[in-house]
Image 1: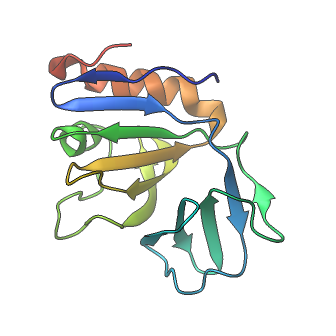
Image 2 (image 1 turned 90 degrees about the horizontal axis):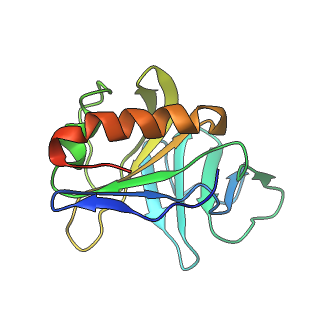
Image 3 (image 1 turned 30 degrees about the vertical axis):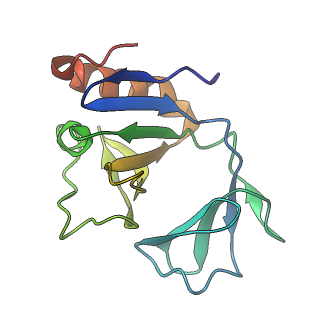
Length: 152
């Protein structure tokens, strides 16, 4: 999948970040517990499984490349949680899924990692499904965002 320019409206912005380098590490990030993320000098690290971390940025020692097996979309804006909750049962309220939270869940029936990474106080979510479902997930996001004027 090629990088697409962001689709955006006043309440939402969607960016395809699928070509961002992504790594699966099995050591070195023990301070980042399951269900959490942490910004690093090079990018972002999160865990949704004990003993495994997803790393955006420079390749950690012994890491496995996920770049071409995981798509990645950023959905940002005031209506981002509302859109996601149309196709995902995860509670995205600030009390249950604050900035820095990470989870593996079903998004439109596809196993997807979701990481909340707010930008300048604006809710922002990274969605990482298997790349084989990237076109389907993109279509679901655009369809669910139709009422907000989100279109490709």
